[in-house]
Length: 213
Image 1 (cartoon, rainbow, N blue to C red):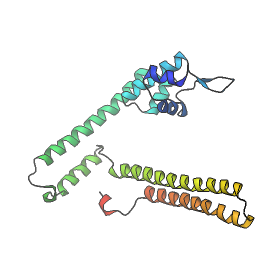
Image 2 (cartoon, rainbow, N blue to C red):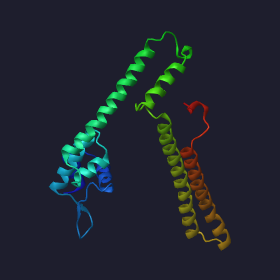
Image 3 (cartoon, rainbow, N blue to C red):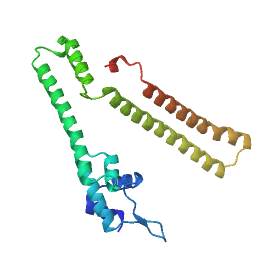
Image 4 (spheres, one colour):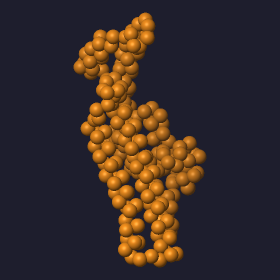
């Protein structure tokens, strides 16, 4: 069956289906004639199993080990139960701290954060995990930088195509052609280099006062 049929049967988008294929969790047969994916009933059932476990927030690697038979369903679920229990304890702790802060009078600018931060630091030393704000910021900034660079590169490539079309209809001296064709490529190279540097900055941390938690 085709991917559109699988999408309806499983209730999963084509994008997600292809993502699981890319991750190696699904390997549909391909038609020898046209190379199109041909999904079987077993593939549909496999996707439903994946969907069930993902709904329970089971990590992909855990699902992979169970699908490959390196971990039984019971072992995988017991392992995930431990993860969920630890997460619940962490959330309970965070909720308790929020309740303490909710009893504080006045506005946020009147709050002395030292006691709360000291309490959180002590809890983290004992194994409690709170939200990693810096890590979340890194992901957001990386995504934003990549999207901006992709848009700019796309624009430059469009200019390159327009130049190719223009020179194909109206020939020009070779020197001018080379110079004009090189300009968008130089900008693309600069954008890629700038993106790489941006990733390095994000990876290593930035000096942003409002993000120094």
